[in-house]
Length: 86
Image 1 (tube, one colour):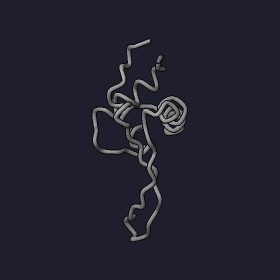
Image 2 (image 1 turned 45 degrees about the horizontal axis):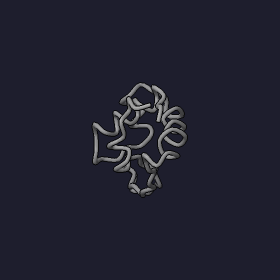
Image 3 (image 1 turned 90 degrees about the vertical axis):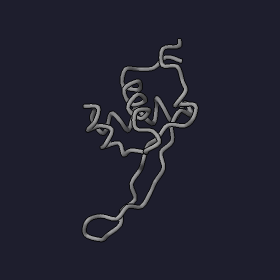
Image 4 (image 1 turned 45 degrees about the vertical axis):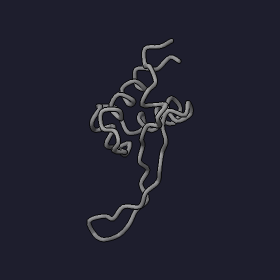
């Protein structure tokens, strides 16, 4: 399974923070990729291959209101996949 440089970057970052799930914006801030790039890379290059999951969670904002936010994390398969295998 070949990986793009962007997929590798996202997978390596998520491995480094495991077991924490992160938002696409948090991943973008940490990796230098745009949020849009993280979202599309995760959807097409990671989740589609069953290497990661996106889970919606409700968070409380500073003003006391609530918002649904998507958190990204790797599956066991994503944690153990060999990024250098062809």
